Length: 396
Image 1 (spheres, rainbow, N blue to C red):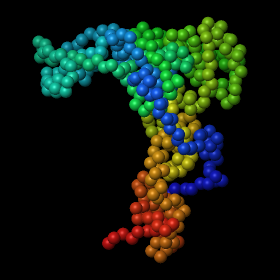
Image 2 (cartoon, one colour; image 1 turned 90 degrees about the vertical axis):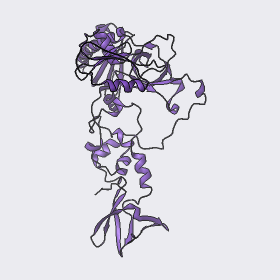
Image 3 (tube, helix red, strand yellow; image 1 turned 90 degrees about the horizontal axis):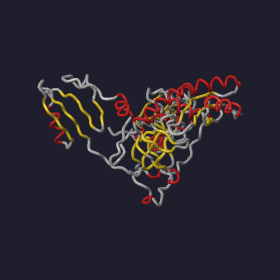
Image 4 (cartoon, helix red, strand yellow; image 1 turned 60 degrees about the vertical axis):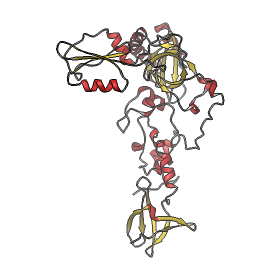
């Protein structure tokens, strides 16, 4: 049975969250830019690796021989050429990634699969060695688009850095032409090697900064440290309940690292986005793995979806309302327009009944009668006629 709350009897732990959430407001879609045809095409959505922030960019190729690589391909190239092992099934021999081609040892019982790939237009070269094993090489056709999950060098709001391409943007209402940046070039093996080296320096910088924070007795929680790829600057992200005077801290850090220091105060939602983690659903946090630009959420969304108003159940690791409350809210809002609200009274079978629960997902309602009966019925039997709800009798 669902429980109704008004503004006076909402649990205290939920009231504590009300000041920390954005209340639902009519969603205003940004108009599609009038000069959309003048925008460079295609437009890509990028994500920073250290803070999972997304932004939009375009790319103008200056070299037709440029090759974009994913993290998998960069790691394989960084490890160097692998020794080929013949006669090993694909389940044990991983695919070798090199220069845009994939080579694999394929069992002799799989020529049909190779033939099917050739029929589908896949570029493939195959030959049978002396052991009867088909050595197949799949040639991926060159695309004019940057592949998804490829790493590139692009300017961010922090400076030039290594970022990941998430894909091509098709909804231009989400693009702000004034914030578009240009992708400079594909990431190379040297860039990725420098990125891995920076990760080791970041661990040292994090530990040193934490020691300095403790020595200055500052009321701040250090979240992460990041070294930019092409700039001698170290970023430190922290959370605090109020403004912090960290001028002396910055002086100490500059003296230790001999680099530009930038401290950024972020909120608890941003902390979850930077650090990542798993939600109650078992999946990666939406703000970290999907997008950092999510719709505002409210307690009303939880009530419309008949969720328990228990802060433990409807809040994420950040302590705020779950971002996913907004995902299905439009469905519930549309569905409830055709359903009565809790508390609606009507006469059925000569008895006055009251709606005590509405299940928009199953399209059912639960009603309680003055005679003590509690009935579950299909909401389709209720019709709003002549300014009141009426039960439509079932046909025998």
